[in-house]
Amino acid sequence: MSRISLARLALGPRVSATLDYLAVVLQAAGYEVRNLEIPATGLPADLSPEAKRLADLLRAPAALIESWRVARHLDALVRAGEVVVVPDAMGVGGMFALEESTRPDPQRRTVLVSAADSAMLEYLLVAGTVAGVPEGLISTVEWETVGYRSAAGVLATSEVACRLLEPFGIQAQPVGLARQLPTSVPKQLSATVLVAGPVSRIDQTHTILRAIAAVPDINILLSTEDRTDLIWEGSTWEATGGVRALLNGRIRRGWTDNPQAVVVGDPLAIPGASLDRLRASGSRLLVAAGSAAAACYPEAETWENAAQLTRLLSGMPSRAAGRTPAPFRLVPPPPKAPGRARRVSVGVPIFRNVRFLDECIESVLSQTEGVAELILIDDGSNRLEVSEAVAGWVSRRPGLIRSMVQSNQGVCVARNRVLDEMTGDSFVFLDADDTWEPDFIEATATALRQTPWYSAVATWTEFFGDYAAVEAKPPFDREVSQRYNPIISTGVLLDMAVREQGIRFAPDLAFLYCEDWDFWAQVVAAGGRFGLVPRPLVRHRVYPGSGATRRTPLAYAIGKARANARFR
Image 1 (cartoon, helix red, strand yellow):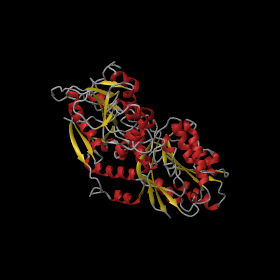
Image 2 (cartoon, helix red, strand yellow; image 1 turned 90 degrees about the horizontal axis):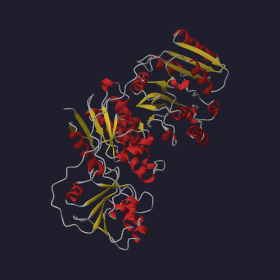
Image 3 (cartoon, rainbow, N blue to C red; image 1 turned 60 degrees about the vertical axis):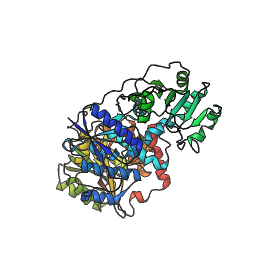
Image 4 (spheres, rainbow, N blue to C red; image 1 turned 90 degrees about the vertical axis):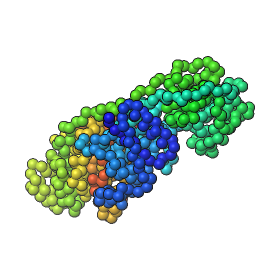
């Protein structure tokens, strides 16, 4: 019997109910289920020196830090080749899923992410977008998205979750199991409709009350649990004041064990045992179409809007009962592309300053996986020390290092000229004052081979010199780009297909700002995807006079606007 582990964290009863349900689904499919208890705080005692150093340097929102912390515990608990399910809530599983997506096969763990409890899904349900989430939740939604996109599979407990994620390019697998209802003696039912779940937007309280208001002589029993309303000030109970006025006092708050009908509006929540008992005792069950409740009770009547629910409450069937959920099966991974990134071309533009050029080039030549060529281009420095430094390196490594010179036209023209001359199957640029860790090429090239749909793979960047930190960010994509550029340096390995698509650096941005942001945006706008190795494998030097210390807020705003105009 194969084994699948469930990562258990203290994220509340709703997430626990989802994991309990998935455990039943997995066991029914023939898997042994193991629970992995993740501590609420702290890091593993045997944390590696590299991880301890990164923990001290990380500068990031709380959601990213927590996701990284959870990944360290999972790293210690899950062996290579094992399968683990992590929850989507708060993005806690996002880092682990991302890390595993970039590992070579012998070291890789298979990560499956649940799709049921994320802030991303809640905002998509309520608002139809995540563009306007509060500042404090932006990083949470980012890492929930990373988890979905990086996982080997996304297990959705409802069809609704699958539909919500599809526009983001996330293919979720709907899984479920019809409930075996307890044996119960039918009760004498009251003429009451019980609305299960809290009074909230996600439970569709507004829609349910509007539907009931159109049906005379129905008494309504609402939960006493009120949730803060995401759209209006105060609670959803307060926000429904106008609809409640139409019901002429037919609403009470509380619970009953013998309702004529039970209405379930939350499409994502796993129904509890109390709903099992009501169904078994004869209460009519009206559930949101495509919901987790519809998967648990395939025989239940379903509704999609207020009009359909009104018809059901009036005794007129709205449509056939829900479908039996698909059984769980472990989908085999997609084929790899082992031939990719076997000839990496590197370009280094130089302008006047060669103080750090030796460190830069040595970091390229000392890679654990060697490069095919290194092209140095002098952007019209007109300085003897520059031409001598470049000539010296070419003479030391003939055949590997070659050089070019142009009149001063800016870094974008220099990069474009080098890009046109490269002969490799992939390429990366490095600034002359930055360096790489020895496994930069190996790690990014492995990720390209492991994940053929990536066009590019970035890493985190460590600032050093006058400022020491790792400002950790998520992978670059269309949504992240609307807020900021997560790639600090140009240290990104790209498939040469990007060049063949005609993507180039915009020459005028060399004298403004964010020319790299604009380049990444072009890749995504052309259909490309970015991977990320979440380790600081690029080292970015900070010193007086470096470009990052001289840009104004206006330059940043212009660069951001120019980059995101690529998506229109």
